[in-house]
Length: 259
Image (cartoon, rainbow, N blue to C red; front, side):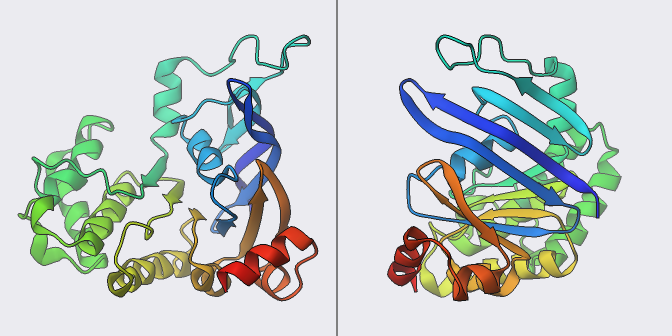
């Protein structure tokens, strides 16, 4: 398998606070990677650097064979002297190859479900509206919401909104899907409907990074689990290795609290 994403020596400072400290991560084509760890450990920050919602202080990120940032820290301050990102036009085109599902849905409230899904393919990729709509209907069918095509987000449950958000992310036919705690804002009884869609995507070998507190999902679905703590990756391995044979005391403590 080829690497869809390579992250090397990633550092992110927020003022004097170091959110990410020399993080290295590679994600292969078709792989599902679950990122777990305590709140404030840098999980979401790391995820957001993949599509430039957060820009790194130093390090190198390569997406689908193209390096879009490669910077070294300044010798005196430890901060990046000049962020060496691709020009905006090239960067936007590359980042359109990622799909993002947020904790709080972020759907356009004034658009129907169908319009939410077709907006980016038409506006960003210049796709023919009829083709975009046909693809959107396929995605609505896939997430079990084809009957909601003409409804607005305020008419949907939280689980339905998140499934529409997943369909919207897939509409751009991304190289990688990014999930930032997609079930944490949902009631427990509807969490399963979103996780089932994500399980189906994993079974179809859609490349995914999932930041999650759902240990059952990470254990059952992920090909690899990454444990973060205080801005660093402390352990990475198969679900079997992480959940049944943790090497660090910190991971053992975390799992005892979560399971």
